[in-house]
Length: 171
Ligand code: CO
Image (tube, rainbow, N blue to C red; front, side, top):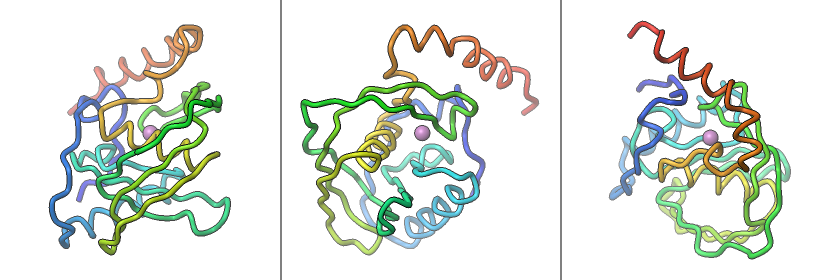
């Protein structure tokens, strides 16, 4: 399996990922690979499209409480709080760029765990933020789509550098 993290503006990052029908060996292998890549790259979350796999699978690894290391298959956010908070985000697929993103502070997310168990989780803080960021990836949305015009202007040159780098790389 290719473990190269896809970098903006790679079009695979803009696709809507397909639901997982069966949690078979290929999905378990995908999840294991995603955990490896996330650890290697030092990320707190990773979505399958980021390694070029167009499936609705995310993995999360947050040190906060120890147990927040899990995979979610076909995650759905069932509730977003009206209250929003702002936090700086980055993304392995948008290297070198960080920007403030406003998102709902609390969510309820459901999905299927690695073992096939149905999971429903009410959460806030960093975990809620990372889950929203990763679910966005499954819909072809990047954090840079969700920032203020002011932030967009500030990172414009850096984004252009990534675009130029992609255009000049030998394939
Ligand atoms: Co990301």
